[in-house]
Amino acid sequence: MNTNHFIELQDVSKVYQDMPFSGVQSVNFAIERGSITVIAGESGSGKSTLLRLITGLMSPDRGTVLYKGEEVRGPEQRLIPGHDAMKLVAQDFDLNIYAKVYDNIAALLSNTDLKGKKQKTFEVMEFLRIDHLAEKRAVDLSGGEQQRVAIARAIITGPEVLLMDEPFSQIDPMLKNDLRADIKRMARYLGITVILVSHDPLDGLALADNMIILKEGTVLEKGSPEHLYHHPGHLYTAQLLANCNVLSREEAWEAGIPAQKDHVVIYPEWISLYPGPEADGFLFRDRFFKGFYDEFLLEKNGVQIRAIYTGLNVYKKYDRIPGKINRYLEF
Image (cartoon, rainbow, N blue to C red):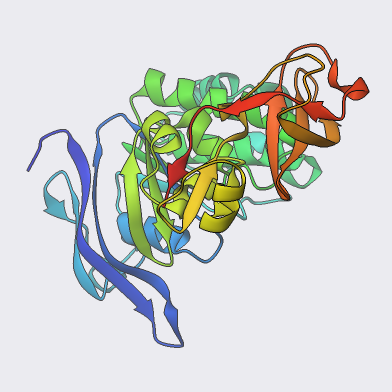
């Protein structure tokens, strides 16, 4: 076993008897110490099941989950389910909603050293920027604030692995970047190995050292965010991670692409557009303002594709836009 592999899943399967197409099947992957791993996939793909298997809150039907080379024991083998070195932050946060923030966090520590308990609690709250909320009840907090309290509860006892189930699902999009940055800072500063699941590809692209793409309970592919984005091995991965154009082989030929496979994928940024009045190129159909760039809906021989352009808006007076598809993928 590689000593950097804190966690390994070897041929792990778990199927719910009342839902035969749920759970996970024949999952194999390893996670290194101190890394941030994002498990991405559509809802129902088995992401939450994987977290529960890793932490020992659930036992696999087949296969083995290893932590530092030792098998993780399931609930049948432990009085209190769950691995002592791991903490899971669930989607519902699992807070005492009528207790104060300080009490929610401090309750996880022993009372043998009350001064040290208070100091450590405020250190964790300051680290996650919630110390100003210490006297507020959890029920009076926003979703993002509750998420930070839940994370503080999870890390105050010094776990080696932190697992998070959809940590951004109840957070305003404007606050997501701040929480992503804090999770990354926490992992690096505290040396915690972080595993989180998300249906939003931006969470993985912005946060992960490694991503695992899960589809219908099976691992489709894994790798760095950069590699999976630029070189996806499956159509599903490209659609999950990028706002891409997907054309059939027939549509691709109409757009000037000599496709050999069933599907062609073109990322909007792979289309170069050139200002000017030339008559050839794409038919202009619509423009969508996206802030620092425009997204254009274009058409070529009846096939519509989307492209992005960051230059000046010079196209509104032209019916046609000269352009070139620089790259495409076939699946």
